[in-house]
Each structure stands twice: as structure tokens, then as C-alpha cells.
Amino acid sequence: MPPSTTRQWILNSKPTETPILTGPSPTFKLTTAPLPKTISRSQALLKTILLSNDPAQRTWIAPNVDPTRMYMPPIAEGAPMGSFALAEVIKSSSPTDLPVGKYSANEIAGLQAVTPIEGLDLGHYLGAFGFTGLTGYYGIKEVAKATKEDTVVVSGAAGATGSMVVQIAKKIIGCKRVIGIAGNDEKCCWVERLGADVCINYKKDTFEQDLIRETEGFVEVYFDNVGGGMLDLMLTRMKRHGRIAACGSISNYNTPDPVGVKNFFDVISNRLHIHGLIVLDYVHKFSDVVAELLQAWKEGKIIIDDSLQTVVEAKFEEVPAVWMKLFDGGNTGEVMYEDCGLATLWFCLV
Ligand SMILES: NC(=O)c1ccc[n+]([C@@H]2O[C@H](COP(=O)([O-])OP(=O)(O)OC[C@H]3O[C@@H](n4cnc5c(N)ncnc54)[C@H](OP(=O)(O)O)[C@@H]3O)[C@@H](O)[C@H]2O)c1
Image (cartoon, rainbow, N blue to C red; front, side, top):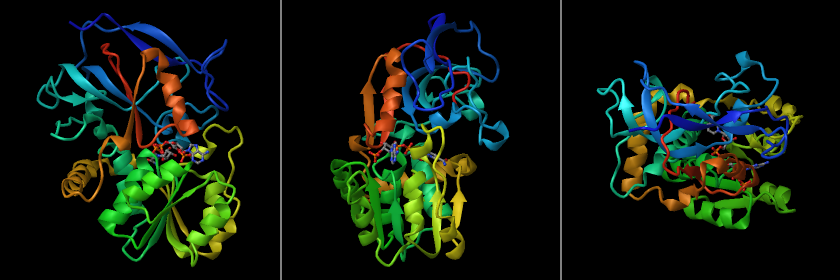
């Protein structure tokens, strides 16, 4: 029997800078809400197994955003915080589409059933074989249109998306040279083990010189996870007709005055295409992409192992603190929160 109540993290106050976890006006508040006795025809009752921690969640709670300019409705103050998740179906109003006993998350229309595969941790369905893998694949193949002839730079290369971009670029597309950028030497070594020809530590004083040296002759493709100053710098390292996949801007997420694109002249004079992307536009390709990535994994072309995910054992009360680790670089690959086993009904996991 599912419990009659569930706990929820409510968005208490939209943060203008770094989210506040304690004090009189915290960003989130933990509450207990009743679980409905019956589920509607569009719903499923889910027991959360893993919650995904994504920088994009920061953009969903930003203040002063024009909802018409967002790719999805922002989360309102007082509403439960959203997250991607892997969940067990406890009760389903549509057992044909979503049988009880399979794993998924959300309102039925937005759910994706997944099949456990021997030798593969289920958590990878939130990372490598989830939205971040799909984002990387879509961004590097369809948006940046990387080819074997291209040199590719990937920022956030040790992250969930970046680590897949590096592998897809080098090992699936076969790009000539792949240059990763990450926040410490250990991460850089890991990115090189994944297949990057070189990975540069952007926190070193020599970063700018290192980047200029490694991009001598300039590069065709930049996969941007970071925005801000890193994008400004990369604009000066692009070849004419270079392609930039503008995937994310994490360096701006906690700043009240985001750093803009300062070197816009480079965009004009080099006829760059900065192509925004939203993974949701590519959802119809989800199963094809997962099948291709799984095949590459089976053939040993790409590495999918525990190093691609950081599973944090934490109490539900600690979810915001775990999520905040993303902003100080405490992860490699996808960060997941391992649920302590309480049933949760997610009405609107986005
Ligand atoms: N457009 C889309 O559809 C879409 C979909 C998914 C994700 N995204 C975006 O893609 C980016 C990566 O997302 P993810 O889910 O793969 O997260 P992630 O890269 O796994 O996690 C965040 C990483 O970003 C790095 N970082 C944090 N602050 C930074 C800063 N100020 N400058 C440079 N690097 C910083 C940290 O690594 P270091 O140690 O290397 O600093 C951190 O580990 C995010 O910007 C996200 O919003 C976009």
C-alpha cells in the first residue's frame, strides 16, 4: 500500500544569485503533501528511485524571466520543484502504455518506459542514455554537424553532457581532434581517457595560452556548455564558417548580471552559426539514439561505467544541497540522488 502523504521540495523563493539553502528565506522548503487516494486517467503513481540533478533546473527557477521566452513554463513560487527521475510504476491508469513494474517518471504522456539491461546500471537512463546523452548526440551531430575533418572543442567536458559529446565526437563520428575543457587536472585526465586528444584545465592561470596553443589554426566546431567568458574566448578561436552548438550557459546561472557575448564581431566576420538547441525538439529520435549508443557501448566504442555518474546517497532533506554540488564542480558525469525509499507521486516532473 502506498503511503497517504509524500514529501515535496517546494520552490519558496526564486534566487537572484546562488540559491540559498538555509536562513529565513531559503530557495526551497521541504513540505509534506497528501497523496490522492485515486489517480486520474492521465496519471501514474510512481515511487522515485533516482532523481536527476541538472544545471538546467536553475534556469527553471530564475526570477524575472519572460515565460514566452522560455522553452518550458518556469516553476512558480509555492509549486513543487521539478526534476527528471527514474521511478517504479506503483499504479498505472494506462497499463498497456505503462505497465506496473516498469521504470519511468512523470505524467503518463511525458513518461518513457525503460528496460533494464544486464551489465548496465539503470541510472545511465538518466545520463548517457537519458536526456544528457541525447543532448550531446543531437548537439554534436545535428546542430554542430561535426565531421571527421573537424577539430572540436567541448566545454564542461567532464560533465554529463560534455563527457558524451567527447565520446560521440571522437569514437562515433571520428572527428580529427577533440579538445575538452574541464575544471581540474583529474577531470581532464578522465576526459582524455574517454577519448579526447587533450583536455585543458580552465582554472589554471595558463588557460588562455593553453587554449590558444591547442587550437592553433583555429577550430571548426565548439560545443558550448558554459557560455560567458569561455564563449567569448572561444569565439576568437573559431575558423571562418565555424559552427557553435550553444547548449548551455552554466557560468551565468547564478549571476544577477549574466556576462554577454562580448566578441560578437567574430560571429559576424567569420559567418559563424551559433545554433541554439533544446533537446526536447529531438525527443522523437530518442529510441533510435539510445539504440545507437547502446550498440556503440556493446562494441566497446564508448565507455559507460560508474565513472559517468555520481550517485549520492542522501536523505530527501538533502536534495537541494546535493543539487548545489553541480555548481562547484563536485561531479563527473550525471549526478543522481538515491532515494531513501519513500513513495512519491510526481504530478509534474519536467
Ligand atoms: N540545451 C539543452 O537542451 C540542454 C540539455 C541538457 C543540458 N544543457 C546544458 O548543458 C550544460 C551541461 O549540463 P549537464 O547536465 O551536462 O551538467 P554537468 O556538466 O554534468 O554539471 C555541471 C558542470 O559544469 C561545470 N561548471 C560549473 N560552473 C561552471 C563555470 N562557472 N564555468 C565553467 N564550468 C562550470 C562543472 O564542472 P568543472 O569542474 O569542469 O567546472 C560542473 O561539474 C549546462 O549548461 C546545461 O544547462 C542543455
